[in-house]
Image (cartoon, rainbow, N blue to C red):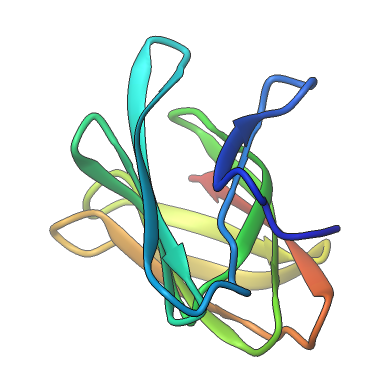
Length: 137
């Protein structure tokens, strides 16, 4: 895996990939069209943030690269890469319970807050990635 040099792109399988944790200055791209929506990405070594139609979707601290991101109303799946451990926050449905799997290991159920935010920690080492699957109960 590698960082996303163009900041955000659509993959051949229909998913999107985004983020570049190697950048030392905040870089952004606005107006990326995907499935009828407009995406905005801000990324560098301290943070990666994705918005869809002005609404929060994904954020990691420090910055990460996300591969094959797919989301629907039941499930979110992606692979995340970085050079150090990261805190990942996703916007999901408010006050709902989700099952979380990291690298095919069930890590438990988590409930989103009133704003629909769900945060997980991922352990990363340089050029390492983990697969994340979050399913609504």
